[in-house]
Image (cartoon, rainbow, N blue to C red; front, side, top):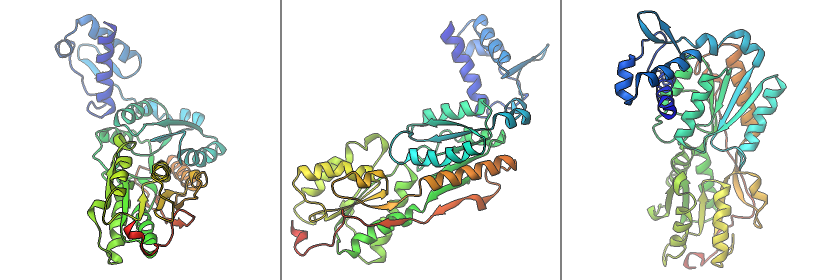
Length: 374
C-alpha cells in the first residue's frame, strides 16, 4: 500500500508543479482516483491526507479537495529575507569548467549573505525535472541554471513556466531555451567555432575535421561557426569531416570516427576542431597510439581554455571561456532580479554574450608541404 499511495501523492504533486492543477482548482474525486490508480479508498485518503498536511491541498466541507495556494508559503517575504536562498544548477559539478563557474557565483553570493544550494542534472531531463520540482517546493529567491540538452525541445518546459508563475526569477548560463527568452550569460559559440576553424584554415589546413556534441546548443552553434569559416574563406568543405555526437555516445563515437578519418587513403584530415578540451585530450591518447605526431602531422584545437590545456604534454590551443566571470555576472543578475522583484525576462539588458578569444599554444601548426599525402 505504501508504494501505491506514494504514487498517488507524486502524481498530484507533479501536476501542481507543472501547472496542470492551478491554485483553488478542485482535484479528482476519491472515486475517480480509486479507478485511476486501481486502489482502495483508504489508500487514496492516506495520500490526500498527507498532501493536505504538507500544504499542497486543502479540503472544503461538502465541496471536495482543492489545490492550495502555495505562493505565500513559497514567497513569504519575511522568510525570504531571513533565508536568502539561491540555487545553482549545472549539468555537472565536480569536473571540467564547472567548479570555476560555480566558485565565481558562490563566492559573490556568499559575500552578499546568500545561502547557496548546488545541484547537477547530469544533462538528463528526469534529473532536471526532479530538481526544479524541489526548487518549486522550497524557498528560493532565484536560480542560476544551465539547461539540459539545450539543443532539443525540453519536456520540462511547464516546470520553467511554473517558476515564472511562482515569481521565482532564474537566469540561464552557457545556453538557454529560446522559447523562454530568459536572461542569459554565455559565450558567442558561433564565433567560437568560427575562430577555431579560421585559425587552422589560415595555417594552410584545408582538410579539417570537426567533432561537436550537438544535443547541446553550444555544439550546434560551434558547428555553424565551423561551416561559416569555410564559406567565408572560400574553402570547400568535405562533409565526411563533420562528426557529431551526443551525451549518450560521447565516449564511443568520437574515438571510432577518429580511427575512420585517420585510416582514409585520400583527403585525410590534417587538423581537427573539437567541442571542448576534454575531447582533445581523449583523442590525443589514440593519436599517440597510432604514432601520429602533434602538431607536426595533426593539429588539434579545443574549446573552453580549461585547466586541461596545461596538463597535456602538448599544450592546447583553445577558445577561452570566461568561467569565473560568467558565474559572477550571473550571480549579480539574479540578486538584482530578486531584490527588484523582476520577472524572468523583464530586463533584457542583464543578459551578456561574451566575446570568444583564441589562445594559441603548441597543438596547432602550419601545414607542411606533403602533409596531405601522409
